[in-house]
Length: 249
Ligand code: NAP
Image 1 (cartoon, rainbow, N blue to C red):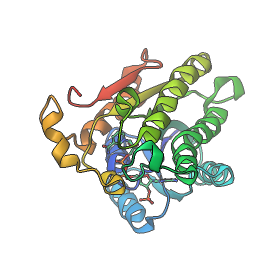
Image 2 (image 1 turned 180 degrees about the horizontal axis):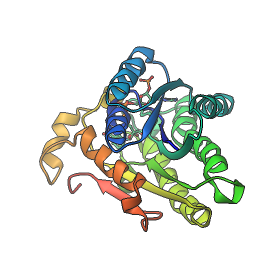
Image 3 (image 1 turned 120 degrees about the horizontal axis):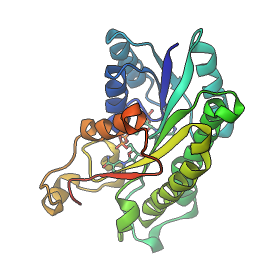
């Protein structure tokens, strides 16, 4: 029996670091990505070189049909005896820093579609496969939120922060809904981590370091460590937790 973990937005940043950490922990790893096929293929080569099985699955997590097809591709490619035992809802986007009055509907729709609906769609597909009430063998889900859910990101992206508030609420509710069916749901709330995501907002992440108690930005590997622990049996009694990985912020 091999256990697969699916990591959405796994081709770069926190998702890629999580993929490598999960392979090290003995998972077979499927990474989802939106556009960057080359980055996804390069990472799957590295994962295979570490001795694990690996798949790259292109899909826009905001699209119901694409998400369903992605899970079906994983079902088919997983191999005999394989099962989906882990899901990391990591795919997420920000938008250019702005005040509320300068934002528009298209931006809000896309942020909520990717960050919230994408998480809902993937949780639904995973729960259908993992639930012991449906013949599954249980599993673990980790949702990527943000410390922004707490602070609200005034003046830069209150809309992004609101999507992460929704992810927190969803995490707590689903954790209680699914634990009796063998599925542990938890969340990780990173602070400011050095990844490409900040280019999309125009935020000078480096300048923010001085305002963080630990006096530096976080590394993707430091977030991956928390995600891998929540996925593992070592976290067997941890249900509905929101784990801050934020240097004291
Ligand atoms: P990143 O470096 O920008 O990487 C984003 C990943 O998500 C890429 O693999 C990208 O694929 C994928 N993606 C984007 N839109 C997608 C879609 N619609 N469908 C499928 N995949 C999609 O991001 P990151 O900084 O690692 O952030 C990862 C998560 O952590 C996000 O949920 C983010 O909100 C959260 N977070 C990050 C920070 C931070 O400071 N970095 C702080 C708090 C929370 P392509 O390369 O193919 O586009």
